Length: 364
Image (cartoon, rainbow, N blue to C red; front, side, top):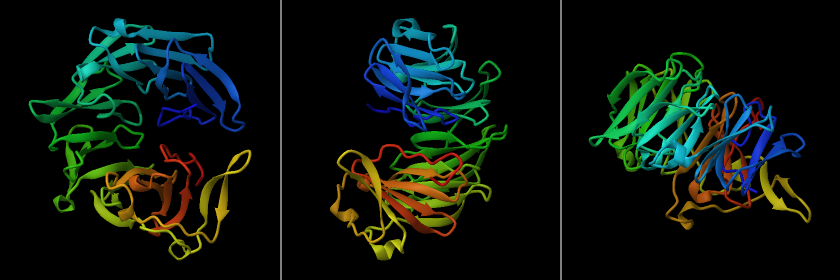
């Protein structure tokens, strides 16, 4: 079994889904028991929960299929040949849980479909199939990154007014990598845009296209590796290619608040008494073992030189801690206290960490 989704849990977190070939298995989050099984017409490559947590979108090689938790006998299937002659490369939910974005092969266009199977709108030339598109937290706006005449272009659409184009403008990036809206659940949401790994630049825009501030650090050499908004959108966490994480104040126009440096080795003296959780295999079960006195050498210079930087930064529910994964140490998750700027704990897994998510209301 595997989960090919960055958000395997439903929005209210009572369920999580796992793929098994052409089957989608729905588990209860508390008991871990399987409560429902959906069978697709072909192998599932990835899936996504709708924002209301009631529907599941399964992306297939030749189309997509939708299932309902409330109506298990109902399903919706749209084959690739009905989407258009270009073919389908990706699909994702619109926040209203009533429409699906279907991204065509070669990023030629985005088709917006309703659950009734009607092709309602088409948007031109996204830059990427798997990123470069973000919705505001309240679902009112969508920002789309595209590339025209050698320049990055940002387009803001209204999701509640028939996908009307609000504004479109040239971005200040050289070769933008991604764009993400803040977590603010209001009409004044801001979004960030950052450049490719070769250029250290980040720009923060308002929804009307105004550049609020920018972060330019050419002395860093390589660019930004990962970015994450805090839950209140008052801060930004940035991970670079030199295994350093920075915390910026969004309400203070990008002022650097602190630099969180990752240790190059772990020992009891470095951890200052913090517990280390190591994932070990018992005879019959997988379990975590809490260890007080434990030493493991993790010197970056001795590891794979092709992997570098911080590839994952995840805030906890109240914005006081972040979980960080260094790509050269992909089986270790560092838990950092942002307020005190110190290492809080370390999770050591036997296998590489693909996804890490905090509990929505607890520091777990």
